[in-house]
Amino acid sequence: MVLFILGVVLSGFFSWLFTHLYFKRSMRNQATEASREIAALQALVSKTVETNRQTLLHKRIEESVEAWKNEGTAINVIDTYDDLSDQEKADLLDKVSLRVKGRPSKKNKYRATGS
Image 1 (cartoon, rainbow, N blue to C red):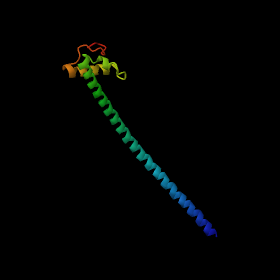
Image 2: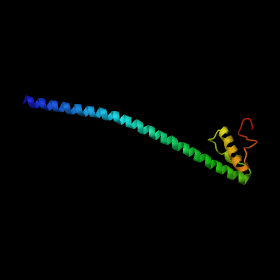
Image 3: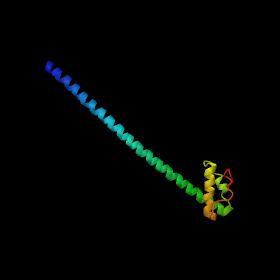
């Protein structure tokens, strides 16, 4: 009877020990894999954000060129882009002017120096 109880206790102990060691190792592997996956996802998100930013810039240039052709200026359209800084608006106006006139604008209202 004593051997039976001792066998049950030792069996339970070793079962717990092996499960515990396996669980600890699995948690380490899971943390490593999760870190790798998070890094990959962050890189993908960064790439997607940059692609979307470039697509939006291209769309804005096309809208501004169309407005320039219709109205003779793109300033009214560029003024609607509230998320752009004055420097970004100045660069956008220069890009549009390059497409329409073949040169940057002589007077760029978005530049502090007026160049």
